[in-house]
Amino acid sequence: MLALVLPILGGQVAQTANGFVDTVMAGQVSPLDLAAVAVGASIWVPVFLFMVGVIIAATPILSQHLGAGRHHHVVPTAWQALWLALGVGIAGLLVTRNAGVLFSALEVPVHLRQLTGRYLDGLSWGLPGVALFIGLRSYTESLSHTTPVLVISFIGLFANIPLNYLFIHGATLPAGLTIPAMGGAGCGVATAIVMWLMAGLMWLYVRNASHYRRRAPAGTRIDGGPHAPDVRALAAMLALGLPIGLAIFFEVSIFSIIAVLLATMGERVVAGHQIALNFASLTFMLPLSVALGLTVRTGLAAGAGDLAAVRRAVRTGMMLSTVLALFNLCVLLLGREAIPALYTDDPGVRALAGALIVYAAIFQLPDALQVTASGALRGFRDTRSPMWITLLAYWGIGLPVGWALGFGTLLGVPVTEPLGPQGFWVGLIVGLVCAAVLLNLRLAGYLSGRRTWQRGSD
Image (cartoon, rainbow, N blue to C red; front, side, top):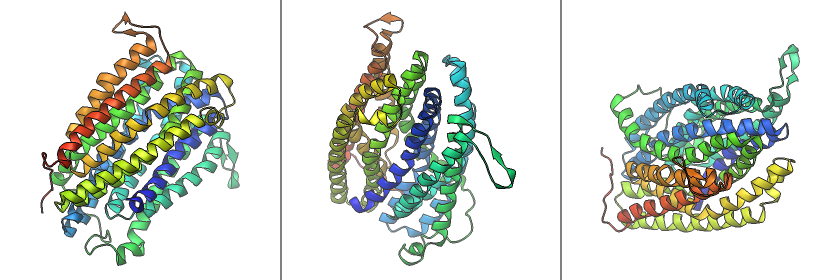
């Protein structure tokens, strides 16, 4: 499990660290620029993760083909995943470029709305590129070859830093080309460039690396021309992936909608919330990487019909996620004062962020348990029930609790003294606990043998 997960972890940390770099570099300009990146991230990150959820439906399909020895299905399935990724990426671009409607409806301050819009406009052009990267990533991870994701993600991270500086502060390049200073909005342009860079590098690797010629099973190498889109295969993959994407969207969007709701309380409140959320997202990459690896291991064992191997994989994944969650909890509690100082010098923002980091530490364990259970369920191709569970836990329970505690009212009826952002974070904890309990109960049905899983067909 560690051999599979560690490269995934490195890649996930590197990709998430791009958001960390954007937040830190924008925060050095001003609290307004930091808030613009924060509100912008609250829009594009849920869209991006929805895209990821839809596209990674290819991973359990490919893993089960490999586990069952159906190698001749691997390349056609991988090509359908790329066609799906391209369509989803274009859809993500269109949604992100029209996010201004949401800002107007929620009465985000005009000066913040304008800067956020420029940030999103630049970033949106990279979404088709990152979608193709995720499609190729599903292919190579299903082959248990995770190193290229790690290497290419770190290349993207290191490229993002100078590109951010270039577009934030502006520069005059050779041949008289001038790049204007864009402030925090420049992070969006830099991120778009990095997204396409990563997609291009992954394509070159998959097509040319010796690993696929020498070690990959016969018939699993993408070495010929493209396979034409197959409507039936795309529909089946979309039917599996759409619930995954919606489940991830339901979870992540509750974090993001809170950032938008808090925009009415001022840019410093948004900035403090974003710092806590951004660092918590970084620590979340540890259990998420275990979940992604567990999807592969569970899919391989499920494809072979080996219940004992399924149980062993899930048990190992759960133990590893729990240890990592406890590690994250310690890091957040011990660093609750030092972490905000990495982002900003504003004492008010730092104080609020430090207080919210304590709440982030509390939800580490339930968050790890729910995401690991989701990863295992994807290996069984069980995606619809997790979708409904996450909708209930986050939007049916977590958000109403957070709204009531944050604003002090529910459906216009006063219920308590307003707790502000702290109240919303309590709601997040409640939602995550509910999701962890329900998803693990669902998973227990498969491990006990009471529930059978879908193995696909030839």
